[in-house]
Length: 264
Image (cartoon, rainbow, N blue to C red; front, side, top):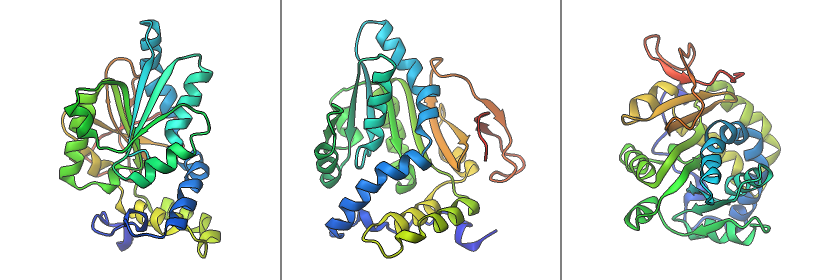
């Protein structure tokens, strides 16, 4: 196994997490997330499989559905969910939260009329306020967390959702790292954090067996196509997934939930 990817690079900081990082590079990075995430994060099938059923249940009950995006960054995923729900004819109120005021300021300034709400706070603040949502999501957040922080965020997610919680992240994989290295080579000298932080994010992310071991009861790890890995807590609203063995990323005895639509 490649020594670079043998274990999670949990103690190596990403450049954009530095409060004193280059503000121009940060602005450019948030802007590029709107291009990169639709290509690599595979949120559309996650929306169809996990979010849309619970949002439709809310609509059937005659009330607006609610979605919380934890660690929303530049808000591109929150805006995408708002658009998809509107196309499906549903009244959905999406809230993006992030403890970094730079992120929520940027997201609010670039909402483009989507109507998403952005708040500078953490998930435990909403738990303390007694707030509830039909769906709780995050994108590329889990690999930033320590084990203790992971446990806290997952516990908050369960308290905040009345329907489903889906945390969508990268899956540590040599092919993913190499493909991203090649794809972002034109950005090597650009004033952005996308290349350095993206490659490090892959190194910091989980393999399926690692995430499965880290998840508390009631959660499952779901291996997605395009080198994705989900942490899911869902009721009967979500379509079921089939259990299967991952011959590449998990030990022979480990079994991780598998999305039958995967292609990688």
